[in-house]
Length: 204
Image 1 (cartoon, rainbow, N blue to C red):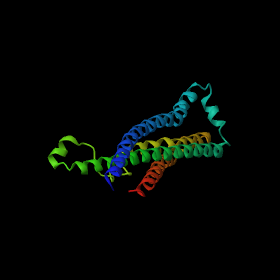
Image 2 (image 1 turned 135 degrees about the horizontal axis):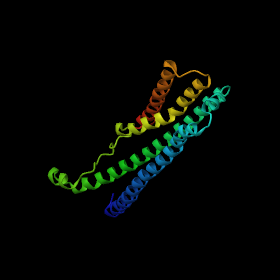
Image 3 (image 1 turned 30 degrees about the horizontal axis):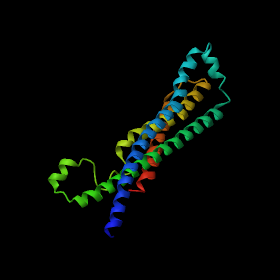
Image 4 (image 1 turned 60 degrees about the horizontal axis):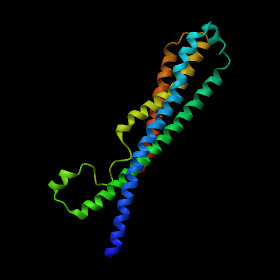
C-alpha cells in the first residue's frame, strides 16, 4: 500500500470509527426504549388483572363464568407468551448489533495504537477501552438478568391461565396448581436462557 492509499484508508477508518461509535450508542438507546415498550405491553395487562378482579361486584360468579373457556384462556396466554418471546429475540438481535459495533470500534482503535507503537506504560496512561475485536463477547452473563426478567414476564401469562383455570373449576389452588405455576415459570426462564445462549454463542 503506497502512502496515498494508506492516507485514504486511515481517513476511512477515522470516519468509520466516528459513525460506528455513534451507531453503537444509538443502538444501546434503542434497546433501552424497546425494553420499556416491552415491559409496558407485557406487564401492564398483568398489573390490571388483580384490579379488575377486585372491582368486580361478584368475583366468585365472574370466575365461574370462565368455566368452559379453559382451552381458550390457555391458548390466548400461550400466544401472548410467544409474542413476548419474539420481542425478546428482537431485543437480543439489537444487543448483538451493538456488540458488533463495539468490536468494529475496537479494531479501528487497535490499528492506530499499533501505528503509534506506545510502550506499555504510556498506553496504560491513556487507554481504557479494549483494542481486541474479540471483546466484548456476544454471550454476556451480565445480560442474563434481563433474559430472566423476559422469561418470568412471558411465563406469567400461562401461569395466570393455570391459576384461573383452577379457580373456574371451583377448587382452591392446591399443591398441584402451585407446582404447575412454578414449573411453568422455571421452564419459561430456561427456554429464554437457552434461546439467548444459542443465538449468540454461535458467533463467539
